[in-house]
Structures are given as C-alpha cells and as structure tokens.
Amino acid sequence: MSSNRSRVAIACQGGGSHTAFTAGVLSRLFAEDDLEERTEIVGFSGTSGGAVCALLAWYGREHPDHDPGELLADYWADLAADDPVDRTANGMVRLTTQLERMGVPLPEVSPYYTPTSYLSRREYLRLLEDHVDFEAIPDLLDGSEPALLISAIDVLTGEFELFREDELSPEAILASAAIPDVFKAVEVDGSHYWDGLFSKNPPIKDFITKTETPNPDEIWIVKINPERRDRVPRSVDGIADRRNELSGNKSLNAEVGFVEQVNEWIEAGYLPEKFTHTEIERIGLGRPDLDWRTKLERDPSFIEELYADGETEAERFLESRKWE
Image (cartoon, rainbow, N blue to C red; front, top):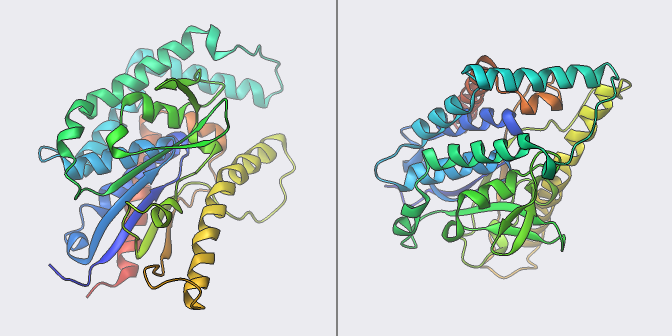
C-alpha cells in the first residue's frame, strides 16, 4: 500500500429521507477498488440521517462479517414504506403536508402525548438494531479504527454532544435524529437530547481539534442542503424550504469556516508544524425540485431514486480525482 495515502474524513450532513442520497454516495465510494490504496479513512461524522449513514459505513468497514455498501442498501430498503401499514402511515404524512399547503388548520399535538411518536421511536430503534449489533462494537475497537462522531444537542443546557465510537447505542443515534415535534427528547446517561441539526450538521472542526483524532488531509462532505438559490422565494412553501436549507447549512458553514481559517494560519506560519492543511471537498445533492417536507417521504421509488443519485454523484467525484 502507498505510504502517500491521503488521510480522509467523511462528514454526512443530516436531512431525513434525503440522506438516502448519502447512503448511495458512501456505497459507491467504498465499492471503489482504489479507494483504500489511495486514501486512509481516518474518520466519519454525521447528524440525523447522516449519522445513520456514517454509523453503517463505519460499522460495515470494521465488522469482518459485513460490507458497508450492503448494510447501507439493506437499511434504506427496510426503511422504505413498502408494506400496507407503512404505506398508510406514509400516505398520512403526504396528506398532512398537502393540507398544510392548502392552509387548512391542523391541531398541534405534543410528541409526548401521541402514540405516533412512540411507534416512530420504536420502529427507528428496531431498524438500527436489525442492522447493527451494538453489543459487538466494543470488540471492534482496538485503536486502529476510524473515529466516529455523532452530534446531538442537550435540550436543557444547549451544549453540543459528540457520541464517539465507544459510546454508541441505538439511543445515541436516535438522539441525533430526534426532531422535537416528532420525537420526545431522548435520554442518554441522564441527559436529554434533540436532533443534531441544531448543533453540528455535521461535525467538521472536531476532526482537527480533537487530539485523539488523526488530523485529516481532506474532509469529504456529503451535502444535502443546497447553498444557493436563483431567486427570492415568495410562496409560503418556498419560504419554508429556504429557511430549512439556511438553518441546515448555518452550522456546517461555521465549521467549514473554522477549518479554512486554520488553513490560512498554517499558510501564514502562525501555527506549529504539527498542524497541517485540510482540504474541503463536497459531494452535493443537486435536486432543487425537492422541498423540505419530502425529508419525511419514505416511498420506495423515492428512496431508490435518491440512492441512485448518490451513486452517480460519487462516481463523478471519483472521476474528478483522476487517480493514476
């Protein structure tokens, strides 16, 4: 293996069902024969749906009986609403969305008082446990594995939390995905957490600030929310879409900005030699036709389409590397 391998960390932005795109990206990346010869994967990070994808990719690489691509494909196939009960539930989501767009007033019910929240939580945890043996994870840790950073936010203190590879549990992953109006706050070790979209979406700067994490030469960001739009939104839907995109990108841009500032300090000679330049690369979901409500869509054809889009974008990214 080449001693000149680039150290790479992969960061997965959150975005609900849209992160089926991320699953397709990761599946294609790890199917590349030259990837391990050209790079050393030193870390994964993720938030919400991106946290699930990061977990599955990390676990699939580290567990001798699994493959990341197969795990990612199987998980998203199972998540898709393909049985009568799931199709009915998904249909209700679409109906509710349509009524909201029409301006029909709907009752607001706290997730603490609705069976839907309980059932969603139970199904989410079941899916995770069906695809990841969390009890086996401690045996996979020998110090050579890539870092895994899963973000959430403490509801009471407002402090960021990073769950690491030695702290993984189904509840920790759910904590990163617990949208406040869908799930009640997730308790982990006596603290209560909400969706990591409020904190680090996804963790970036921790790859270069954590002493126990190898400083990557590159960070590949799998990006869900678009940065730019061509026109100012005027409709209620358009305004809601752009607000969701901007809030989803705010923390990401702050984290990337920190890395870029460190790069400038390195180039100016302000930092010790142990600090190294970190290149930022992006693999983005180029689907301006998707609105934020489709982040809850689980129609099988929709999931498959996004997964295939991810594979295509990863292929383009690998082509752009021009490894020779």
